[in-house]
Length: 166
Image (cartoon, rainbow, N blue to C red):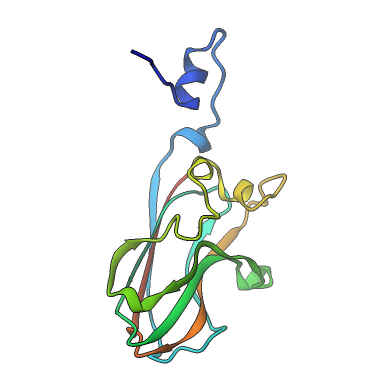
């Protein structure tokens, strides 16, 4: 039988042992969850800022709860600077890309990997590294939904829950 070790275990059993960055292997689990009331015909390009996470967060899950759109409506879910840092988009579709809301209703639907940009390997990495930064900027980022297709009868309650580790 073969034994396969994760990076964390490989580092722990190495001779000499290799220290593992605690941001990548262990920590406390936090949940940021918020509810927004949106229009049933939310317009393309609208940004729905939902929750704020620190740059050193390791993102474990991005869960969406909202009603079914009648015939149209899609969103990206990604990362923005906070208003205090200029509010610019950092990666609009890091977690979900043109997610059709006609496939709902969505109840704590996991969108963490929907776009294919955020990888399983990156889920063990702090957000600042995922965003390609050389050092931790020690700032917060907004996780937001950007409407990519104008809604038609979208659910008017939009809930986003982000589970992360620090």
